[in-house]
Image (tube, rainbow, N blue to C red; front, side, top):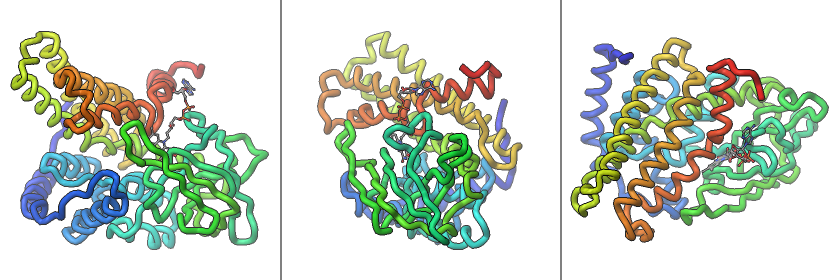
Length: 376
Ligand SMILES: Cc1cc2nc3c(=O)[nH]c(=O)nc-3n(C[C@H](O)[C@H](O)[C@H](O)COP(=O)(O)OP(=O)(O)OC[C@H]3O[C@@H](n4cnc5c(N)ncnc54)[C@H](O)[C@@H]3O)c2cc1C
């Protein structure tokens, strides 16, 4: 299977490359990982640069193949990734584009594209992660507003977000998948409290979010009342679609760097290390092919990614962990030094088999929806 690029797509690639070569040297220096206001400004600034150059809407308006080319070329050139714009550009934005009313699209999409507003994802709760549909955050209707109370957890970028794509229970008596609604909640609304959580790698990427009688206009609901589960499936299909393309390109670069380091420090003489590096190279090539296959499928199905994203996520998250395990072996005692390259990445790679749906859940999806196995 080979993804064929049309002359127009190759032209897009060439034009993008040329533009990146001029735009990247003009970028300001990257802020430190814990400087959240700085990171927000940097990430939004990059999005604004893309907007001014006509590339801002590539994540949702372009065909999956054009999006693949964009993500591949920007990563190869060392351009910034979406960063704090992740939820807006890759989850909430595409969901609103697909499911929102004309008014909602006009209100929320332009600020995301222009790099003006940050979104976060308020899905998980302390007792609703894998079993997301058992979420308990309540939304009581009061005239033309919902009054929302409950709590969310692991909300990435909540500290710097303007909006939250929030799942709430609007009907406590309906079967659990049928009583959920998808709301856009302003993070500065009275009653919203954000408490940052520190990760194993030391940063505060995500937070707990407490909601105490927060008033959200009914007009902020995307999709029908109690139809939020279907809308959520649209959001999650984007999350597991092309969202990791840039990371695969980056991993292939890191693999080459690890091999260079092994040659330089003598670890290359160990045939076990060479075998692991060779196998990882084959794994990443296969993942790249799988990405292209998923993109072809997405193209055929009108742009919405399918369950192939779960196959990809399942293998990619594990292979990424293996990459940094071999990096630690190559570094030897240096792997205990947090200042060395790859050491913090190794710690954060542990979260990959959990975030965006655990590996066990991806296996359930693959088993039920691709292999047709009975539900356990
Ligand atoms: C880095 C990171 C960023 C995140 N960002 C966000 C965010 O921005 N917004 C957000 O809403 N959430 C976010 N999450 C939360 C993430 O979606 C959840 O952690 C994930 O869905 C798992 O839920 P849980 O942690 O409650 O684990 P649980 O669901 O409690 O699972 C515990 C264990 O049981 C297993 N298990 C559970 N059910 C089954 C089953 N049916 N079959 C087999 N095994 C099962 C799981 O695989 C896991 O090993 C983030 C998580 C991480 C790690």
